Amino acid sequence: MPSPQTALSEIARERQSQLTKPAGSLGFLEDLAIWFAARLPAPTPTRLKPMLAIFAADHGVAAEGVSAFPAEVTAQMVINFMNGGAAINVLARQHQISLSVIDVGVATDYPVPAQNSARLYRTPIAKGTANLRRQAAMSEAECSKAWQVGHATAFEAAKAGKTLLIGGEMGIANTTAAAALICALTGYQPADIVGHGTGIDTQAKELKIQVVQDALQRAQAAGAHSAQDWLREVGGLEIAALAGFYAGAAEAGVPALLDGFITTAAALVAVKDNPAVAEWLLASHVSQEQGHRLALSALGLTPMLDLGLRLGEASGAALCVPLLQSALALHGEMATFAEAGVAAAKMV
Ligand SMILES: O=C(O)c1ccc[n+]([C@@H]2O[C@H](COP(=O)([O-])O)[C@@H](O)[C@H]2O)c1
Ligand SMILES: Cc1cc2nc[nH]c2cc1C
Image (cartoon, rainbow, N blue to C red; front, top):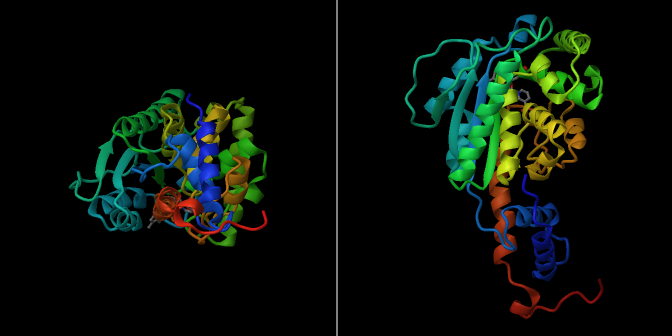
């Protein structure tokens, strides 16, 4: 796995100190430019070439009543992505991000859509997962196939010259799977991590906590130990694909931008599996879902935005793309004190 080039981040840090602004006055944007310099790698990186892949799949645990929406919505939203009507379509158009939708296990049949607003890749591995409260969500073969799909997606994007890989997800009930994974991999309790997802009430949330508790107990008794074990036991097909996607991005040496709660759970799996993956991950936003902040902290990541989003489908990540472009443009194009003939600080 390639390592970030720290010598380049030092050159970028030095440049930041010479730009015509009080030191540190561009805050986190300065850190971002320095972070990208080591990874793109260049002392003044050029405009990012982002790609965005939404991995879609269903979850057997939806049968437990843990989501505010019926499972059919996963397939219906895939159609909506293809028709250009989802939030992510608006943001992808606005910020000129190419959009792929990858069906790794949507349970409901849907007609072959026109490929106008996004490219659809149909690589369904199963008709959703099994109910993770009662049995392993996936077989070993299913889990590794899903991981491979994500891994290949990242590699192909890297080969095509993309310099920012964005993963998103769509899957009714996947906040239950994500919460279970985060608990398993961090040691936090379900009550700390489980949230309202698509908008369940307090009573349904209590049930969701119990479902996660039961799933963790069941998987523990089944001998789950490694990140891959937990992924197979309580994860999801799109979560496995995302974990493979992040691992692939790191192996290809291309930065990956996380989205919300579910993508962060997938990133935790990839990082527990191989800690070096963390070097290539960037957080976009902290979602409203309870536990997201703790999960990001467990990864050592600081989110750029806190907008109270809880949509998923890579919407939070897409919103950060213009800010990242601005961070790099400022870093590359601002004049230095010497170039502009501006007096530097009297005291430092
Ligand atoms: O990204 C997030 O933080 C996020 C938080 C809550 C819900 N979601 C989205 O809502 C769906 C999962 O919610 P639920 O209630 O069905 O588990 C799934 O399609 C996610 O993309 C996403
Ligand atoms: C309508 C809808 C859109 C979504 N986009 C991502 N997750 C979603 C969940 C629902 C329910």
